[in-house]
Image 1 (spheres, rainbow, N blue to C red):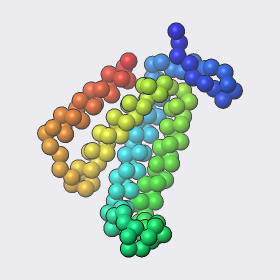
Image 2 (image 1 turned 90 degrees about the vertical axis):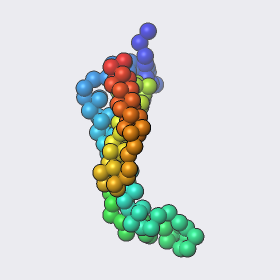
Image 3 (image 1 turned 45 degrees about the horizontal axis):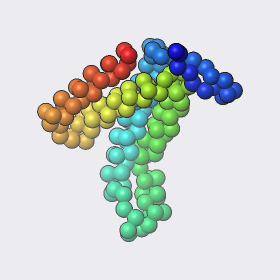
Image 4 (image 1 turned 30 degrees about the vertical axis):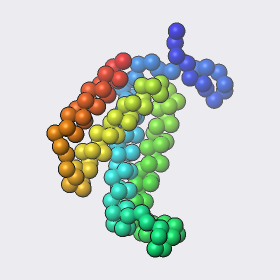
Length: 142
């Protein structure tokens, strides 16, 4: 039995059960944009002094974040990632695409955090990332 996805017209449209190279590249692009968004927003948050509304309230927090270009660029990257992801959702099975998206994003954010923020990485973290990468390969080939 072939899996179906709802179309805008209300008709059922067959979803791709095996991920094409084009769709895999879209998932990779969405993951990359999401990872960059996370890293840029973290950078902006650090420069803005973190998230605290005790001293100057929510408006003060928004104004501090608005002054950090990396935070704003991170928001734009998130929006672009969402648009790319919406395309994936329209043509691929979410049960295949989503685990790949989350796994790739996790790996990219971990590597980016080590490179950009000099966060430490233990042997167990490296093993965990390797297991996630192996899982991504299995899901992509399923």
